[in-house]
Image (cartoon, rainbow, N blue to C red; front, top):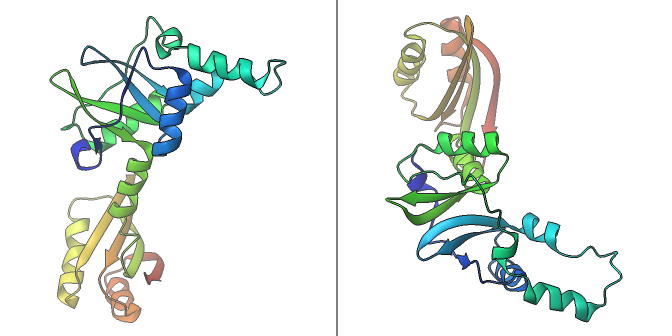
Length: 215
């Protein structure tokens, strides 16, 4: 799955001249948590609600409401944007798992998507979660079969062949090898457990669990 299939295209942006108060208001109105910062059509940074809360005066401050508002409306994004900052980006044709890995390694919840030097989108942890839910078929009714299998050539073909013989369609599958064994999770578009369990047991596959998901 590619980043372009899950990213938010044409994200809302701000500039260095945007004030903290304006940025916070945009986030509140649009219900977003991060804003790319642009300068002369080029991406120069990204700020998050956490960044803005860290530079905003503490609630315990002795400043009055008027003084607080004055500071927020006078402080520019350019004043808080790091001068030397390694900006992490991905391309729209990068794989989604690459974006997820970059988020994890850099401790961020969203990454700008850049193509030919131009900002074309943003991919966030919520997009990754939604993709995982879809890959696992969690929004689809049917059987979820969890197997422990030998990590060897042809094992996936064997399981697929058994489901074919039953006339059962595998809608989603996840395979995670670990040494000599592997965990295989199948989503099937059937609701009867017994025929599936019977054919797998006859083929000596170890069934960890079978769950009927009704959406």
